[in-house]
Length: 112
Image 1 (cartoon, one colour):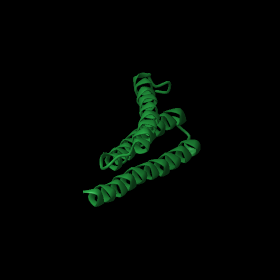
Image 2 (image 1 turned 60 degrees about the horizontal axis):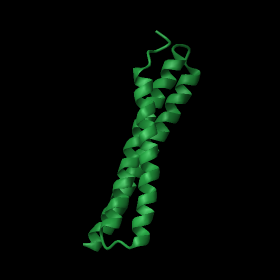
Image 3 (image 1 turned 180 degrees about the vertical axis):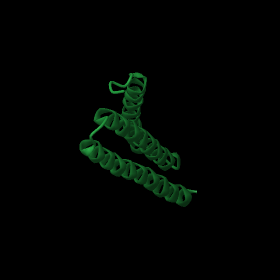
Image 4 (image 1 turned 120 degrees about the horizontal axis):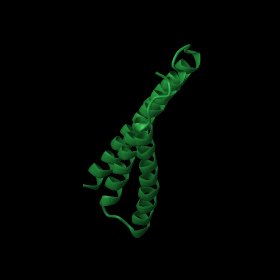
């Protein structure tokens, strides 16, 4: 069971990392496109931000899942404490990202 959990942690953590890396590359490319675009630059940045925030939320969720899996097998108090700290930090990040997403999605576009 421990070996399965260790491999699952590596795989799920890698998935989260890949999601964040892909999202970061996409956000960079969309931002560069917005800089050189002649029309609706603000809208392009807004859309890039929204998409990037979604990528980050997804990636952080996968990484939190990896932490939970890793701690679920024979946890020590040190590991549980570390998981608690990581979970709190990632939960706050997710909360604020989700809040920003909701605000930006509900805000009417200034261009158009």
